[in-house]
Length: 394
Ligand code: PLP
Image 1 (cartoon, helix red, strand yellow):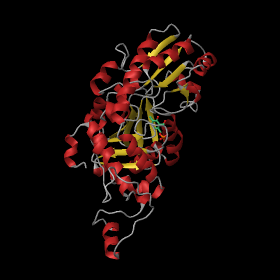
Image 2 (cartoon, protein in one colour):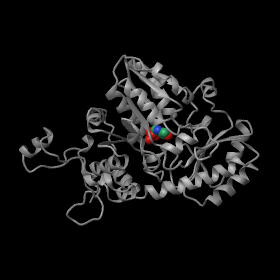
Image 3 (cartoon, rainbow, N blue to C red):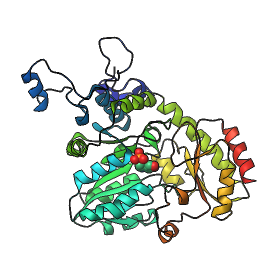
Image 4 (cartoon, helix red, strand yellow):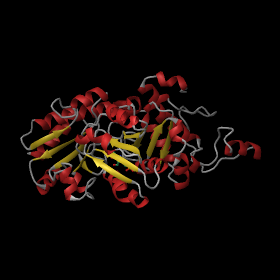
């Protein structure tokens, strides 16, 4: 069973043993406690937990459930953070993080492309609470200091970004934000803790859609926030009172998946590298966006801050939206779907899914063109994925 000394332990070992809480029956993993509530031997024992004098189990929506606490501990260890909170989705994790840190009149700076739902939250929903966001392109990171105002509370970004795969310099952004007393929140969904550790590079808070690599099998929806305990504590009441809790069954499934995270992600990295190299030499492909390609703009920063380049890439097909859709429709091993990070390869045209809600003008500003295709490479044989792309693009 993992202990505090585990921060010195290798990532694969933490995936298997980190945070496990075995019970007296001898099961070799943390059991699934799908109970909504927990009993106490006395009122005094209950009050000790309610009033924070004792660590105990109380009520699942509060997160005071052994299955939930166990997966949170494993996730905190994997990201090198002190504490973690799991959520019903990645969007729930992002929303609670922002609501806990911003109030009316406050300001956020968002760098680079972000997931379409995140963009909508920042651009359409939060302004209703008078929380407004300045959006910088990834190439405008040099303007970060100017974009920060005395009401800026959060600098938010993903890296690599969705779907251009731009690489944002985490340590560089953190230096600027820290000097102005602003929190840096990094969405580490695309990279996963196997490829990138934002907290070690100076970020304050990491968020994930656990729906993606951490779940890894396209069979669960969830999110997590990981940070120092002093930053996690104020987020907890928002999760509790907005009722954003991850179900214990999902937490159990997530812990099951995390035990194989390292081997999955390393294979996905290798498959994406092979696919990117194949596409880079294909006559119908105008451009390949993948940090592992030496001539890609973000390659040097990625090589410095990432342990692997990830399982996702995008490319621009030499054709309009219809021709691109026709090529995508011919793929056999890449399923057309709006997610990523699973064992099976997925394909999407960002204009039809993740960035469908963005205006054509904003898409153009961000280089999200009609012929863009995003691939999430799964665990199939790279040769089969390449053969599939060859027949579809021909
Ligand atoms: N962050 C990234 C990078 C994503 O790709 C997504 C979803 O696709 C989210 C956050 C939101 O996650 P969820 O769908 O679990 O709410």
